[in-house]
Amino acid sequence: MKRIAFLFVLLTGCGPTVQTAIVDVAKGVRAADKACAAVVRSRDVPDDVAREVGGKCVAAYGVARAALLAAEAANAAGNAPSLVCASTRALSGLAQLVSAVRAAGVAVPPDVALATSRAHWLAKLGEGVTCGR
Image 1 (cartoon, rainbow, N blue to C red):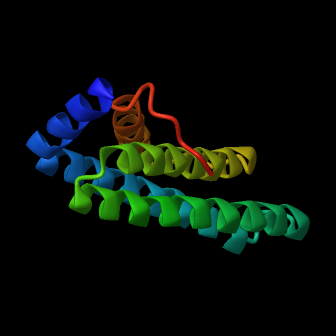
Image 2 (tube, one colour):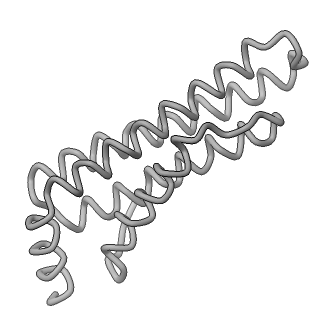
């Protein structure tokens, strides 16, 4: 319980930094999603590969987007445990997007590295927080 109280004080004291991190993760998700779309639209990629990548990207984007919306709401409400859990889910969605892009042999956009770093930072703030489904 002391850990959660400390985390809440840390997050409310660093609101703009947390907000910036959430925005950076969102930018990385958007960049990875654009890379996925490029794979799907590419005439150089076989149709079956494009369909597979497209399906994976749609699912991963859904996970990341929902998690980012939850992180934003948790940050606005000062709900540190929910913010940490949402950030962990956003990181998972981002990692799935990156995996799909890399599997298609496409370079990952530069925004993704910062987004991944920020998502790890947000998730690490809550080490010891148990996230449910």
